[in-house]
Length: 78
Image 1 (cartoon, rainbow, N blue to C red):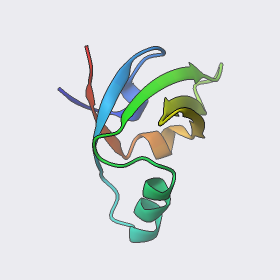
Image 2 (cartoon, one colour):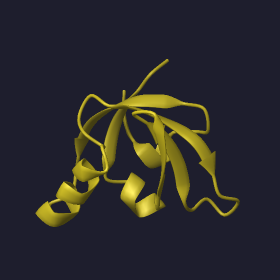
Image 3 (tube, rainbow, N blue to C red):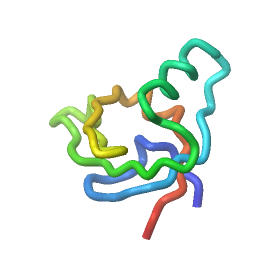
């Protein structure tokens, strides 16, 4: 089932299936951070007020704002 990254709970993982943003600069920025299709992303932590979200991918941790996580489409892993 398709979700966006912001809908995953702490400890849940998903495969990146796409980035749904029409701004090519913003899309390129996310790709440069390693968020490419097929990458497995795990939500590590969420700040107390829900923003930002810390994720683990490719062996490193990355913090994303909720609006950034909302454009990353993922397929939830069970």
